[in-house]
Length: 398
Ligand SMILES: *Cc1c(COP(=O)(O)O)cnc(C)c1O
Image 1 (cartoon, rainbow, N blue to C red):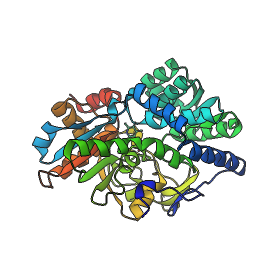
Image 2: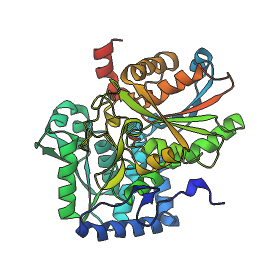
Image 3: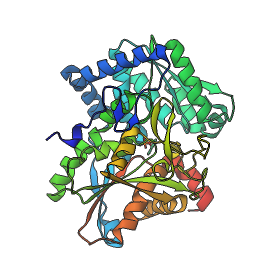
């Protein structure tokens, strides 16, 4: 039997009904060149040795699994944390950023182009570009530049070229358009480095591959630690890269329940959340087909979550597929429950999680109260919360 760990998209980039490559003609050839190169590189020993060396000695992998015994005692199940927050730059994003940068270099490119909203993806890509000796153009809305000063300073320090976008809402949406436009003019020497398992084929496949290191490590670590697999694996879902990365380690273990946690924000109303699997419907945006939040006329809605890394109005095509075949389940957690989990982990375990990761943790805490005491719940802590401390303590106190 073909193992599910190896689920790859079709040649056209489809996972079931989702994915594909909705691109201007002139870019299709370039994307298929990237796909061919990637499929060769992913099994190439010298590519993997070089990437692995960076993951270990530069990014700090493997990240440990920590048994959160204080939380477990208090909430009633065994809670294990995969510590992606301990990676260099503070989140899982460094995993695919290093992979994409190395791929770009092997393709002979001299520049990475990316857009960023809150700046997390921008910082990870700027870091990877620096270590790989590539130029780096980061497109960012004027409003986000003003709001996210620490990450802007970081990117500047890393030598990235930040391009301010002042069209429309002056935020992420316009930054995506601007960076794609720039890329379509510069693709001969540049690569557009996508920040999650979204976008046109082959990028969902590429980012997934580089994030799968999380699940590979986690499966082995939890087996060593507990002598058995977890009952649940829980991760937050924005575009879906940290969750697909950890899910992939367990896709073939049908007894392990995979739970993706979407942000319910302020509530169920369109515009108040970013839960694209729970409240979205089929559509095409940013070069791929998936589930998107949209109104009755098919206009894409604004996404909202207290965790800015989760406020994307769509989701990676493989999640839409895993949902359709019921291999993974997708639940929601609202702002308030996520912020509560942020405080709980900080105060009970001394770990300050990113607000994004707090969504996954919040669901694990909810679940813990409903299951037997020996139930093992593995939670992906996708990033650390330093970036969120100011905001959370100003809004909600110490
Ligand atoms: C960007 C980000 C996310 C959301 O992205 P995914 O592609 O859904 O993983 C989650 N957690 C952290 C810490 C992030 O920075």
